[in-house]
Image: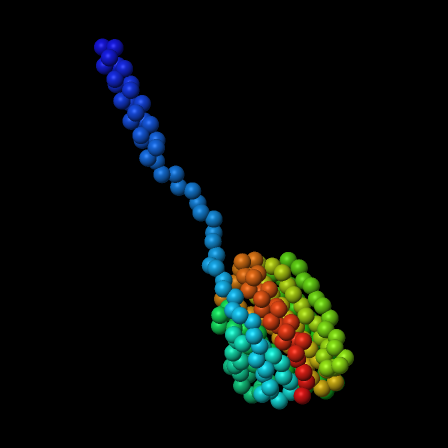
Length: 194
């Protein structure tokens, strides 16, 4: 009887050991994001606008603003590779520069509700009569990570804003936002009034 008990206990231990080894422990996987391939840098001159010219990234496409076809100097710098657009609007200054600056302030304030923080930097270039501000907004749900405006302070006012064509998670999109920021810096630095 002792052999039968020992054999039974040995088989039971072996069965328990085998059963415990075959269990699949399911662990949640961390959320992953797609790999983002950034295109090569190169720039093209946009010289077809009536009031201004600048260089934009070669991976982008210039389109007319579909919501304001009567405005010939309103364009979109479409970046299909990033599913993003920079909306650029132009207005003539005629004693109303203060109103345009208030409009920029209103647009930025709308986005600040979802922002964790904001940084702005002045743009001053006396040689090309290019003055303005670049405004960055941090936060996961901010609709536009940055906006800018440029003016010659007497005749022209341009406003630009980056938008993605999907609901972005700006934390995971940071490499793309940083890349577009560099390209927009180049756009601003090459911007000239006609």
